[in-house]
Image (tube, rainbow, N blue to C red; front, side):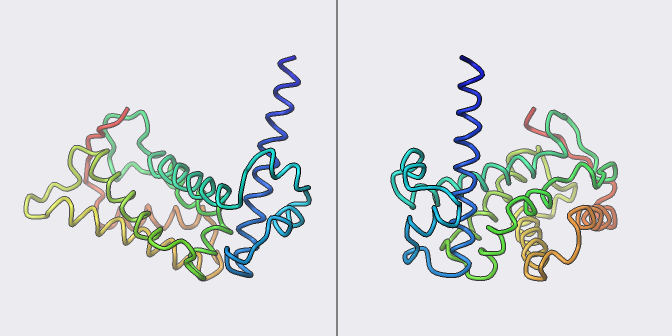
Length: 201
């Protein structure tokens, strides 16, 4: 019985993933308003019955896509210091940085975001998330008492998003591993001696 439930769960997950990917792909070609459920299921190679088993309308898919991306962004950002009490910038390795893997895993979504920005305010939302993570997760983010924490957190958030968007706009010409290596080099060139106390465990 448990095995049957597991198989059903896997089918649901697979179907929902296909519907989400189909919607984002279609949004690269036309506006969300003009996309029909028939087009979504056809692109996903599913039927309308499967759609309505999982969603009531296409807006629900879009909401879930944004929620998935947002949650994964937070998890990816926190990966280098999750379950740590102290993090030293100089000890960071490229393999610990997961945010570029996150973008790769949601490449169609980010391509859509860069090309047509169909989600008003979402870019600002991403920056706010990154800024809040800097402020909330670390006891302090600078050893320089003259620097305002919020200003620095905003700078880092918008700088990170700028690098990501440039990478996406150039068609992911570099691998996620290369981008992580570059980020480590950038951090080490200016913040190698910085040590942060982590507020989350």
